[in-house]
Amino acid sequence: MNYRAGAQIDLPDGEFEVADLFSDDQIITLTGETTLYDNVSKPAHYNLNGGIECIDYIEQVLTPEEFKGYCKGNSIKYQHREGYKGNPVEDMQKSQWYQNRAIQKMKEIHK
Image 1 (cartoon, rainbow, N blue to C red):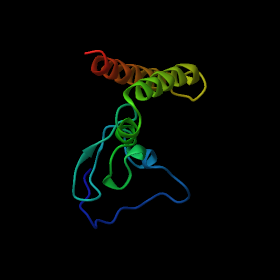
Image 2: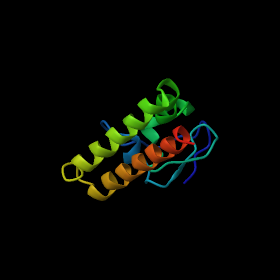
Image 3: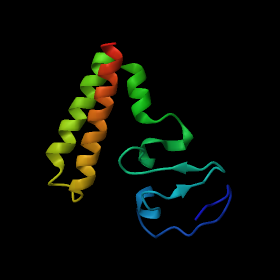
Image 4: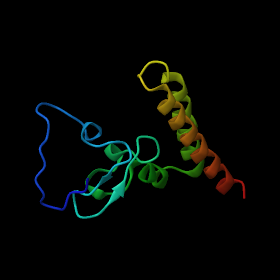
């Protein structure tokens, strides 16, 4: 379901997150632009107000070695928590996603 800017939508009562309103692969068009989000590689809550994605900003402000370490640390974090947060497959996918980012950065560093 797509929404045009200014469209009215019914929201649930109480507190909720964007993930409660849309499926993982749904196209969200709140500003007239379409964006495909998923919980592993492009979570909506890390790209607020149509700005730069958090991971891209972090990569910009860290050195290549620091960013590689950040990605390795996040990979370890998701491996560690996979049995505790209720979605172990997604956590392992996120771990793999961060490993891939670390490998990508290592390729840039060691050209």
